[in-house]
Image (cartoon, rainbow, N blue to C red; front, side):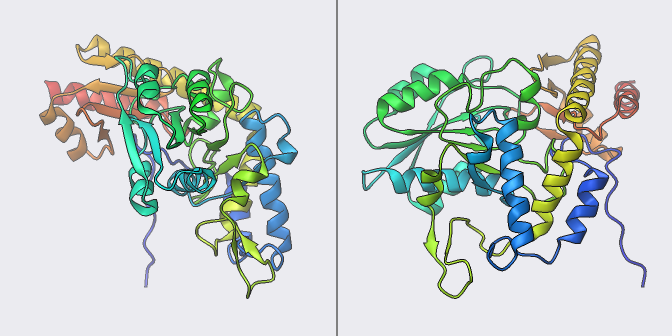
Length: 355
């Protein structure tokens, strides 16, 4: 029987996943059956995971990447849940809260429900960044974690991370940065977002997004071991006697693919990809603006524009995989697989629809 083929990325404009690098694809297949959840048994993939954490920490400007703590998660959701869990476990209060901007990923709502913590959502400003005055007003002695976003999923915005970290410290809270998508783009900008820019405790950064690793390969980083120690549980029947991860058994495919992608592409390959994606986002934003659409000025390679619903639906019917922001705008993410040729075809279809 003929096996189904995976969907082509040719018309996928809304996803924060992309085609994996060939080296990542090959490495993921080789390590498919290994389990980094039991590193004492699967020693080779355990060594690869240490290398993955070191490489991710290098991207995130950790002061000593070889000493960074962390692991390869299933994605940004798991990393964000674990950051909340670690901060909760390290806080003295019995009932804690977490302060998150409106632009925060929906995984923080999952985390609050799963972990029984109060989620305090604060507004963003007119440019879709966290309002620091609102964060300062929301924190108190029971705040375990303040969250900042570095590359928001709807508008590609970077919150004022150093100021948020200062507010967190003054409140006795931890600081977490969600750079799941932005983490592979921001090293080539002048944004202040990472360990070297502020007192960040934990950080989410996903190789399977702009990092071009095979899915699933997320990343949780911590400044020191204490953040992961707060997550550890005993695992008496394994060779490895404790475990700080959430999912337990994991495929080594994500670990091996992440290392292969980063070793193949860091830094020059990623720099080139970011430059191409940024140029494509600027081109698309200008094309939409020239056609009279209200466009949100792109900061990172993500374009949002107010598109009437009939035109949006017609683009979907034409086979384009596009999504909307919470406010209903068209949202296009210029990932490495998104070419200028594809964007020209997209705009040509939009012109045809308008006529």
